[in-house]
Length: 80
Image (cartoon, rainbow, N blue to C red):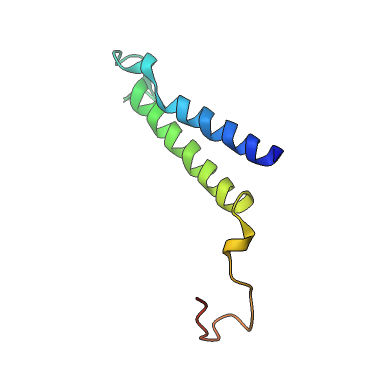
């Protein structure tokens, strides 16, 4: 149960970080000399979300949803 609460807190925090109200009205400072701050923030946010989705599928995916591994890989069997 603690693990589920931890994932919930992380997902809620990432969701709240998506609402970047502080960078809407300013184009300066420029990141890397050419990228507006809001766009740089959104790019970093997208990387964060990709890492979070990888972690969710790697560590929080329910094992009962996966079919049991039977036979050799590529044996042509279809699992419902």
